[in-house]
Image (cartoon, rainbow, N blue to C red; front, side):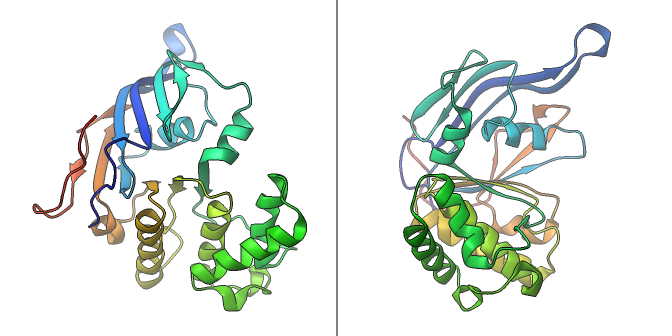
Length: 249
């Protein structure tokens, strides 16, 4: 497995908590979660249903408001004592984060190229530049030969590669994946995870995936276990003993 390439984490959470409701109806979905994820790392969030995995992913993705804690993304402190430091969270997501889901969620009436280009156009690129970048990404992920195909014409693995290209469109260094291989067979799941590792290493990115998929556990550098909103551990390091560990700041 690749060692982290820098001494500063791309994702740093410090004592992040999230609760829903108050009083007798209060549910603590996350309790004092602290994790660091470094450039070049592919890590998993693992735990039973209701353990807080998806809640944690949504907090990191700036989709869900935490109740307490601090967070840094790609060197920027974006959350302090449970308070967002940016007013425009949509722009923050566009700037820093790419999302991959269990089901590719491609727009059915757009071809593969336009599904990727749309993200770039929303970020302000003109149509020609957006399509050029989209084709470049599809080629990079070895699905360029399907650039003119509609989502219904793609295999599950091909559609997920297009979804990964879409997640990379704005060159984010943080990729969040929610069960990215659950709908794929073992062979296609392995191909997708190998592509995600390629992205992490070649783009100095951090990839965080929620998964129950045992067939891909060996593809992760670290596994963070959650139970009842708390970390079971600080991250099981799955890299070889001779791998170079990241320096700490």
